Length: 159
Image (cartoon, rainbow, N blue to C red; front, side):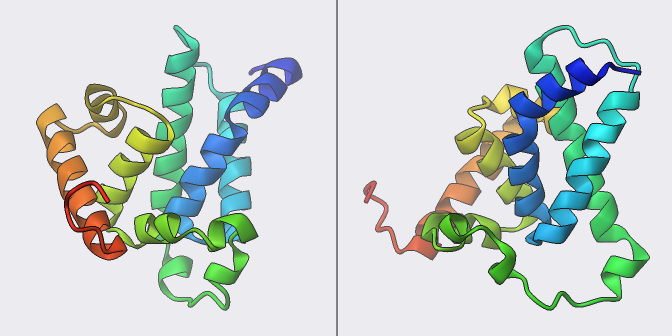
């Protein structure tokens, strides 16, 4: 079990990343808060010894993605309809046309686009985190960018 100081340090360093991943998957503030607490509880109770700060961050991202997927697959979640979806996003994010387009992407594209552009991971690193082949990640990035370009009305020349 980790100390309170270790937990505080990890939360200060990675809270934004965990919350953004939750918002990408869940699109719901209440569920985001629940998964956030779950992830850091798992972190506190985990006996995993991290080799580096990057290993710790990758572990937290993987645990966050898995927890979000578990919630989305849960019986309760499949049998309910959220009352407010977009209204619960923070104001600055709710008005972002690019973020809305990213959120509208299918999950596989959304994950790789987020990890590449927001977290600055390379394709091989994303492949390790998501357990996919590196070439698959390159393909998902290309297709995700194409879908974003179409959704945002780009004409393919970088505008």
